[in-house]
Image 1: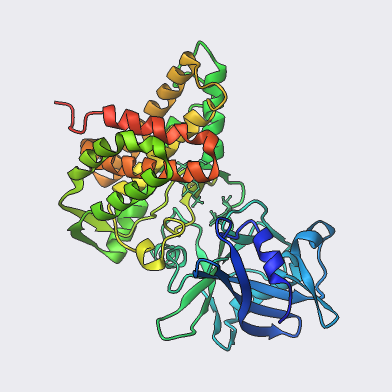
Image 2 (image 1 turned 30 degrees about the horizontal axis):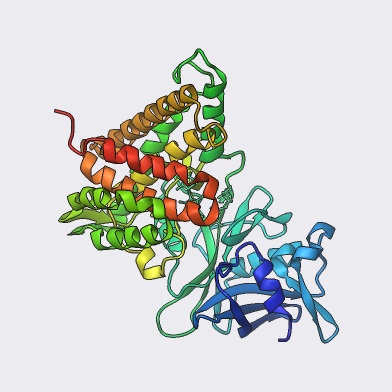
Length: 443
Ligand SMILES: Nc1ncnc2c1ncn2[C@@H]1O[C@H](COP(=O)(O)OP(=O)(O)O)[C@@H](O)[C@H]1O
Ligand SMILES: O=P(O)(O)O[C@H]1O[C@H](CO)[C@@H](O[C@H]2O[C@H](CO)[C@@H](O)[C@H](O)[C@H]2O)[C@H](O)[C@H]1O
């Protein structure tokens, strides 16, 4: 295959090698699915000696909607034009049909989920704007997510959605099928998954932002008095997260293990190297993390929970994207951890939702006061909802919860320094506030 992947790959939104120098891109495995459709593993080699594997479906001379031609076209080989086939409605439908039929081609397996039913002739459209994967929506019925970076082993998104769907959890989009590779002898590697699409849903981040905006627009009203109050949703979200945790604990078990303190310390080290502002709080953060110097109850969790990872459907809150922390190897992402990591992720997200509306008004004391009010109200409601199902209010363990919040805020500081320097002050302010908060329950 001689398509110009070296030029095309770095232009893709999901390409993760921007901070590195790309040396070459080799189509390392090509699986022919049809005369005009191939699955291709691309090995990207960097000048630092590292490699990454990406995957794509390459289509030949496929019809593309006008608006996608520029983005999807890779180049010409032997008189045929090669493109990213997910942008072709016809090719996307064929992939869905392969899943439904349980097709096997060489090492590629298209696996339907028992009982998962879906039509394969629906209008199909790629979603724009995703960072790390590519998804195609089939009308309002199904969504096919193709993991762009291939990481050996089972992707926790497939694994946990399968477990939760089989346990009939009402808080996930049921898994309908998957695509996997059985190359090598280390068990299947997840390549893609298809889940039921949740029509008429809104993501938690947009809902929270709308609520904060309503509050900040009403100078004289409190969070519980404005029309867009989010607290009842935060309560139900807390219930949903606790129910998912309970189902995962029943299905996959719990154990008592040392807390991931060493990883947290390493993360702090790495983040301090990237964010000089953290140096001044490093010792105090380390001191707070010491509360985790002992065993904790761990289980499988979401691992990267925030308001952008939850969808409010007409009936329920859904948790989506169980991939775990981006950039980590599969084994790390699948490692059991305290459910408090997910709770802390969501609490941090409330803080973000309120504060990001102040990015252009950092010195407005009144707005900052109202934002704090929103955060307190919704943190409280979420914890109430969580505790009403789990039997333990997360606020009863302020030391442990605070340590997980600090760990997340430290991660966020490095993330923001890299991606959104204008937002760096949000996690930095949170770290200062968390350090000022007592880590023992009030007497
Ligand atoms: N089952 C679903 N029903 C409706 N929309 C969905 C569903 N799954 C994902 N989405 C939408 O697609 C977006 C990306 O999905 P996600 O799983 O988070 O992908 P990524 O891993 O690329 O971030 C979500 O923000 C959500 O808006
Ligand atoms: O959704 P991803 O798995 O890509 O998560 C990464 O990007 C998130 C930003 O989209 C980042 O989340 C941080 O910003 C959110 C607002 O944009 C906020 O709701 C989260 O609480 C905050 O952590 C996430 O940390 C990062 O891993």
